[in-house]
Amino acid sequence: MPESALNPVPPARAHAQVKAHDGTQQAPRTQPNCTHPTPRIRPKNQGNQRTNEMLKKARLRANICIASQNMNRAAAPSENMNYKEKWRAISHTIHTEKTAILTIQESHLDQDMTEVLGRNFKKNLMILNSAHPDNPQATVGVGFVINKQLIKPDEIEMHELIPRRVAMLKIKWLKTCTATILNIYAPNDRAEHTNFWAKVITKQRVKHLLIPDFTLGDFNVTEDPIDRMPPKLDDEPMIATLREVRHEWEIRDTWCWANLTENAFMYRAQTRSERIQARLDHIYISKKAEPFTFNWEIKESAIPTDHTMVSVRYAPKGAPIIGKGQWTMTLALLNNETLIEKIAKRGIEFQAKVMQDRIEHTD
Image 1 (cartoon, rainbow, N blue to C red):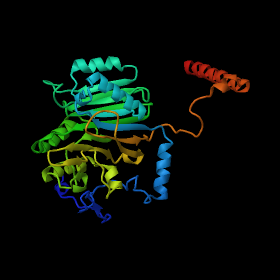
Image 2: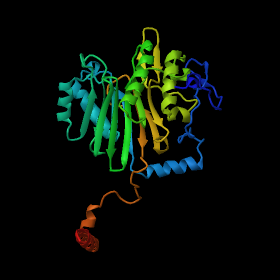
Image 3: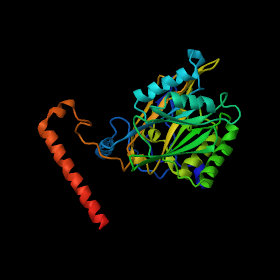
Image 4: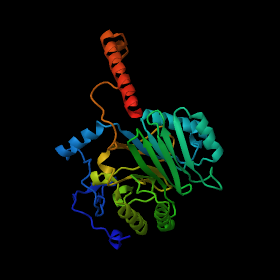
């Protein structure tokens, strides 16, 4: 990895100050030098016509919502919910938010629990989980939940780079639409981060896996003081390690680049002395996929946990264009004799063409 990645030079940016809750002035986040194009999303009133046109074009394509959620264990004892009841809340959230792919951290599922959930939700959801090999119900675990009502995968692969902590999903749908998604649950112990990320990159290379389009999850580190409340700089070696990886893969958190002076928190906790908040959950996007992403959201969900959900919409380059007409026929059209005659005529013509092509191919 280049040595310059450890000491990135921030580009020219706004020098606005952000007021913390205690009234003190807080500097905007530092954005390291990167080769990405200008962000596709900008703060309100700062967009331009070209950006708006690109977003409009992206929305016209068949797009999906990709989201990340730290589960904070399989069950929710504080809400008197066992793991089955909590997963009903997950299923409800996925369908309410129209999420196509949800990455989860701290799943705490063993093989039996995963199989039970797979049977209970097999009609609508596909659940893939990477669990702790010795004590899966007590610690960590990462996984993917695919909403089968929104996408029907033609091909799907899951690779465990670090069992229970890092897994990659390669998925293909609609014949031309693909995505590579890396789900991360980084260690809480700061001393482990350097070895953790070195192992991730080594595994990615050894398995000959592509650079992920989306690297998302709970990173357990904040890169700038603005991403914590009360504001403070996180462990500098941890920050340097994460930035090395971002430069190696040429990925970035596009929301941060578009909102240099705004803060948003996904994790909240109450200590004995104060209430803390932090932006631990991220969606890092590759240079290749970034132009086709839009609508970043950070919102509370119906899932009982101490993290909020982060999501982004993705319209792959090869996705079909959605026109302005209706997606389905109205029932009244079934009684339209003129339309039915035209449909039947087109069907007969198509059938004759298929038969002719077969005859020519046989000859």
